[in-house]
Length: 216
Length: 300
Image (cartoon, rainbow over all chains, first blue to last red; front, side, top):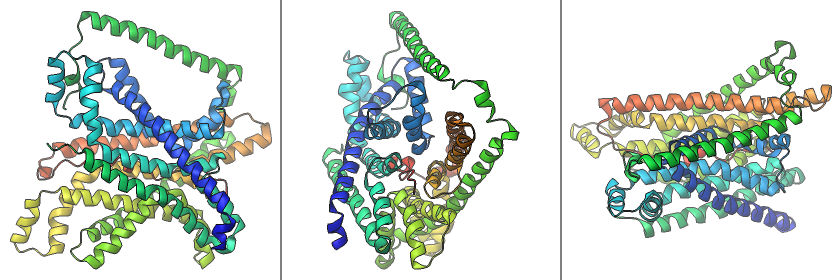
């Protein structure tokens, strides 16, 4: 137990950094992913093609490579993110947005066609149909998949450790170097910290899903 | 919703003209951005052909090194794929067991390994196992970590597949007097695997992507190899080939993954047209399954 007390500050800061990374990237990914989905079902063919291209590329690139590119690649075109934290948020958001878009698209596919047809018959245009009729129903059906994306994102934040963001995985490496005799305690503390994020999330997702479920 | 066109009316002549103008302007903006990026790259001398030719020059040793790294990547991925698939199938059957003393521990194992970041699992294998007398190298740690994480994910995929087989199939088999293991191996699994094949391959793509974590544990897969090449060339010529080598590693990853994804789509098309899967319901791929368990590059 003295181990926990000795390193409480480091663990707390690391935990909060991980949480902040996950929350900020999650919100950004949700916004970008929704825009991508709108592009993928839009009437304009080039927009569809561009969004599909984006999703295909990011789904097939390891997150590590995305990080590498944003941390070291864009320096070559004279760009740089203001801080490492923002670099990590950008990489996580861009990567996760592709998966949000995939989940949301399957949600749109599950909305009965009659809904959109009725909306069009009422004279709504594409933007109105999507934002007032189709997307609200689509979001309800993909609570579970989106929740899983969120949990995967929370776990994916561990990659930021390789790019000098002091979150939980980086704390793990630092602590295991200092406490070689208490490795098991170090691992348990870090795993516990991740579970503190993922388990309540899983429970909350279940609650939201039950609340928002549509009976058809 | 079958066709996306349900969402909008077929564009008329004015809308089409607007789209064309928008496309033209948007295309110009994109071209301009690419142009600026290329111009900056050129201004930093990154487009110098001499810098790129090193990637294809056998005398520099770079193509061979990347070839070896690709083989290493595929090797560890292949071992983990086979082990994770077998263990995942066992766990799935265990989780569907009628006996609570089998079901409960198996469920706990699956949920635990799904909840822990892959990076932490691999570090655990690499750092902790040797201290309790289990000698394990970078290859073993990476393969074991990938296996533990992916067997849990695959178990969930298999379970979804088995549950998606029409209930009548199971009931009919029991009515015919089959035993439980016969129902599972002769009736349910063959249909479930067919249904699961595209999802299974999608997960194997993720596994291949996640093998880039070998970077952390000092296993010479593509990214690590690129890094060591960069260090080698930096010591010899200065910061000359850094950008090119990383780009090459990224391109190899993307090409291999796209090939595997194309295979998944091909298999999906074939299974969809097959009449033998008529008895199974549509199965959705859990979205987290595609995302990987958390890759990371921690210089240890």
